[in-house]
Length: 117
Image 1: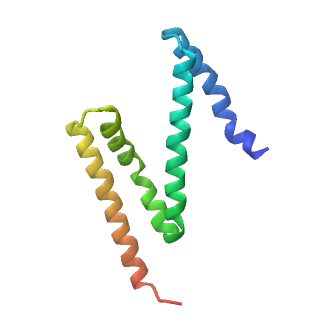
Image 2: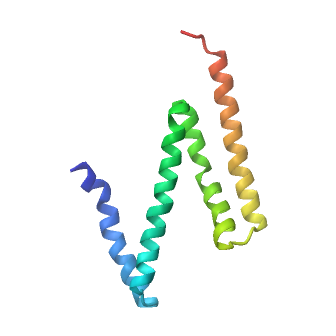
């Protein structure tokens, strides 16, 4: 039952998105297959890398490192589909990575100051 509750927004919004997309531009079977395959492959590779790295990370470090996903996705967009590298994207990426670095430094400092048990 918990899974149904989590899927509820998807079950409502996905058909609406399909109708809107089909109304604006026809979706060919080939395009649908490519979209599903690329999403499955990208997600599969991403999860494989994440779960391979996860055992080496503390809970705090893992939570902080996950915040780099938007910057990684932006880099992938630039590298693989030719998205432009704009000043705004550059600053946003620097802000994300700077915030993650700062959070990791603070977490390491707190861990080194706490008494070891």
